Structures are given as structure tokens and as C-alpha cells.
Length: 172
Image (cartoon, rainbow, N blue to C red; front, side, top):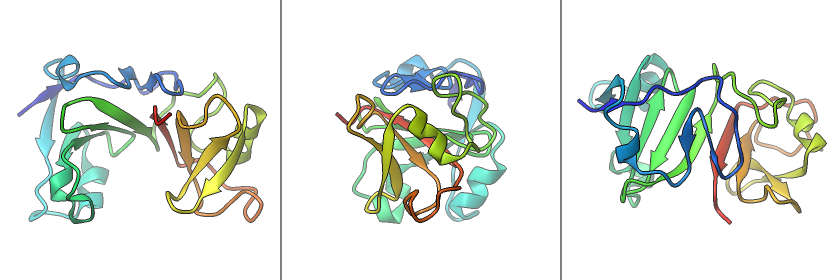
């Protein structure tokens, strides 16, 4: 078993920097061995979504176990029913953080999971990327540093959709 740092479910969400008390670009060694016991997903025992939704502590899922993403060599760590997901590359570097249901922190002190997606436009314009199935900032400094999952359609087609997940990364 691996021990992992406990996420801060009230932590500020900062584009390109981090969320839940974790920092983009940090090494897996910096978070292992701090508190919660982790377990690994066994695809022979249950479906991946069932495993994530029932996990109260850390659940580790190697990319190699995901048939659609077998070309990746990292692993994902899911905490408390997926409210925090950390993805580490094969070199052990945190490349993105996803926060979703039960995460209580905010972006810019005001944007939270469950808010209407259009509230993001107070800070920057967004557009729907149909290839990635996420909403991304455009023409602003946050472009490539944060993205949002809501409905799989643009705000023009569905103006009242709610934020289901926020991704923090540095893809610039």
C-alpha cells in the first residue's frame, strides 16, 4: 500500500498552479507517505466508475489498465469518490488535477463546482472543444491552463449548463 497526502477539499483553484493543495509539475514523491492509505483498482473485481464512486480514500488506476489509453504510461489517483483526481506522468510528475463533486474550493474566490458555466465568462470567454469534450478559455492568459467539463455542447446551444469538473493543467 502507498500512503498519500490528504487533499484540501476547500483549496483555491489556480490556473496552471494547482488545486486541493497539490501543485502542477510536482513530483509524486512529494505527496506519497503523508496520510491516507491508497488502494489499486482491480478491473476483474468491478467497473472503473463503480470503483471511483465507492472509494473514500485514494484509489490508484494505472493508465496501462485503461484499454482506451494503454499508450499512456502514468497513473491517476482518485480521492473521495472522484472529488479530486491527480494524474501523474510515467516520470512521476503531476500534469493535471481534476476537481469535481464534493469539492468545495473555488476559482478566483467565486467559481465552484455546480455553478452555471456561463459565470466563468465574468473572467474570460470560453468555447466548447468538441474533440476534447471540454470548455476552454479563449483569447486570454488562462488559455491552456484551465478547462471545464459541463454538458457536451456549447453555451449557445445550452446556456444554463452547470460545471461538473474543473481541470488545472499547464498545456501552454
